[in-house]
Structure formats: C-alpha cells, structure tokens
Length: 67
Image (cartoon, rainbow, N blue to C red):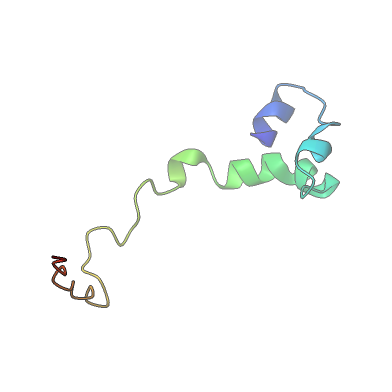
C-alpha cells in the first residue's frame, strides 16, 4: 500500500503518525520490497491445506446428559 501511494506521487509525511512502527527507511524501501515480492507471487492458499494433520485431532468426549 505504501509503495502504491509513493508511486502515485503522494507525500507520506503523516504515515509515520498513522503507522508508528514504520521508519523512514522502511517507507523509502517499500517500492523495492513491492517489486521483489509482487502480490501475484504470494501463495493464496496455505501450502499444507491438502495434507493430513501431523498430530491426530483429539478425540471428542461424549456429551454429559444433565437430568
């Protein structure tokens, strides 16, 4: 998002107030990061989605009947 805003020519003076964890260097390097990791290259689903679980799911207990 920061890289797109910089590409449009917006000045990001107030972004550090909105995102206090961002440093000036992070904002400066945002376009480089966006070019290195384009959205299309990121996996959409978890790679482990079609694999069985490593640990078996815990067995559910029978419900207790309250009379």
